[in-house]
Image (cartoon, rainbow, N blue to C red; front, side, top):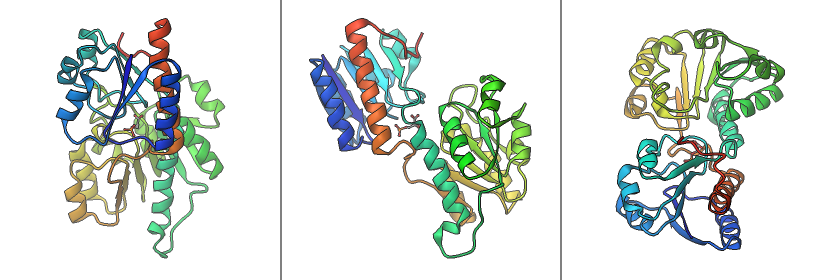
Length: 306
Ligand code: 3PG
């Protein structure tokens, strides 16, 4: 079988070597399309693929139409909002993700942005410490749990809101439970967002939640820009001069921030939360193994299109 790795943002070379090793050991052929710049390149590459490994690459109905032999797509990562799930099901293509495999990297990046901001961008200007400060985790999934672990090491006071996680799981992690997002945002100087992007969550964080945050609030988004209602974000920035926004995904309204809110935001140029060798190896190899296993045994444990 032909397994295509199609990544506009490439994995570390060491991850590719390991993906190749497990793929070839199972008797399959690995084809690489890295750093591609046009949809046409992707459309051409998918035509011969039986399985595809992607990251945030868009798997649209057009791509699925061009992938005549395709049986399975694995998103090497957590969020599968880049894949047209309905079209995949209609094309009889199994879609999987690799939950948890890159979560520590994303959690570390959320913290790295917080540390950089707390120490005034390492400019020499006086900053502040994280010990004793409140942090709220908006969702307590794989990434939220790692952020909680790091926050504990820094002596922070940790809260979480996640109606899908049993309260005991949250409490047993040394984290206090909030009953609503309103409660979380009102209590915490830092809020770190860890929701998946879907029809229910898109644009779900905006003015109404952000306005509740205390003085000198820092809002951290290492998840997706689509979760934010940017009109609301701009409204609160217009009203308050103390609030900060740290994001691992440039908002669509970045130009306004550049013009009006210098010094009050950090935006990474490209989504890079999962861009570590470790995360690339973990997620990339897990994706390859899931495809190999699917071809061999039909295992659909991580299937996301039911
Ligand atoms: C994920 O959903 O797994 C992360 O956002 C990482 O995305 P990436 O693989 O495009 O870096």
